[in-house]
Image (cartoon, each protein chain N blue to C red):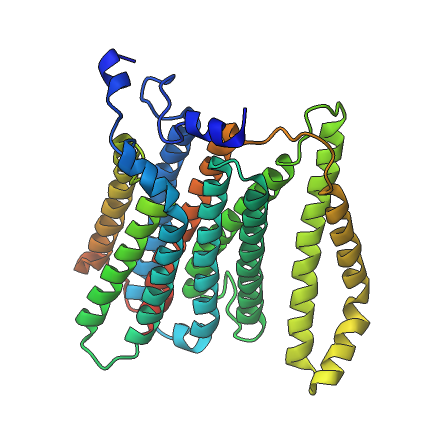
Length: 117
Length: 282
């Protein structure tokens, strides 16, 4: 470890981080309540008489918000080194790409199942 | 060294002894979780493909799923994530007692989730006639949610072992045997609690009248209930103070790594809840 890195705390390790450590209990409880509320909204929204694309988009956005809150706060990515975020997002992007590619391939006309005779 | 002083010297987010500055256990867990994303990505896309192109005459998920039960499970898993986060914070501050209680609550919520899933699967098979092999919906649904359930079960087992690990006494040479018995007792408590709870639910569903249902429950489950109470007493017995414990802030990375796994199980469920359950109701 160099003298510079020893003298300067890495991101997320200064006095602000110490203050955040003290308040983590409150942060966690508030986030858990927020996640519960978002889940309630998700359940209610599927019964709304809106266009499907609006409901699907809203559900995806709300799920994404929940997902990001959990990984950045409960899983500490916000306070950890960025390499952890990069490593996880590599897997996440490959997984997301696989889902997208598979859905696209199987939605192609040539991939549709043949009608049962 | 006091607990407060020890906390001040340990940086839980940075490890200068590694080349990356990240504790190796944490790095390993993040790498594993990244690979597990791809695993679940494949399972989720398989389910979605079959749902987007359902075979004619297939089952209608809206007639099968229970949104109330699944919403309850989702809420429970979110609360278990909260307890897990509090357990990590507690051990990072050297608060062993709070860490143990938070771990126990996480285990408790995890078992409720598993109980709901066992009930759901049993209901789908027996009442809705959806099995693993009689429909595409059943095949992809059970494979996806069952794999997630296995992850939850492994998480509960890991949490249980970590809880027992927190009682390791430094001066006791036979700690392994004691901890093995402690872990077995906890696992027996968890399995019997699941069995007894599902038995109670079954009695309440099948027998008319509350009093008759309770009588039916005791007539069928009294042996399991007795075993549960006995093993619960054993759990309290093993948890009694036995000397200086070798579990403190220095072991926070172990709890944190386990917490990462548990939170991952939660975020996978966030996706499954939307993709598998909610989208069916549109």
